[in-house]
Image (cartoon, rainbow, N blue to C red; front, side, top):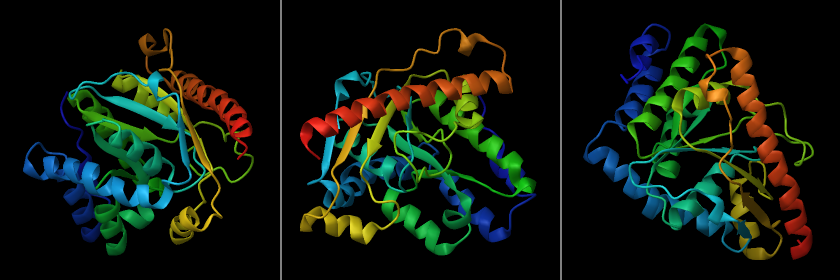
Length: 274
């Protein structure tokens, strides 16, 4: 499987600054010392600040359901979306418990790939895990499709864990009623053909990192419960010809699996008294 022509197409629609940022992060996935160093930093540095922010509040359930992955295996983790920190917290805990895969999850381009501060935050907080960028402008819609192809390429190459929010945007309403799943996750799953594991997490603040860290120590934080599910059985959907309807059916299956874990989390939270 050849690497998608994301950078080549981006040259036609991005500004020179945006293209430089995209090219820098893209190159971090080329095999070599740079990529290996970033994986090491994700494991030994990136997880530390997340632990600092959440260690007294977080509770993880049923990680035994997660498949055993070898170093060259890949996986897609589908998660509900309540805060900007959902995947940070879940995947950091997984790394601390033995996961060695390179971490990557798509992110909105408007901050992390269009501003120097965003690129800096991506680098120092996640060591370029936030990739590829997803663009809002219709004129750049082809880059989003190529970005999904890029994720499929990384998964097929091996040793990669992609975190993905099927909802596409944060659900700020009832945490147990997910927003509709978007077809992008179905497109990626259909192309990648790797295990897809659902997870539900609840309790993080929406977007206030300083307050999240403070609440971990002053007793005011909401407890964070995370529940892992078994890999999703997609039946014959992966063998069906690629189409928007197939992508939608796959996406709906991910949503249903996450919502089922939400009900499990509700019961576990009640039993724990928080």
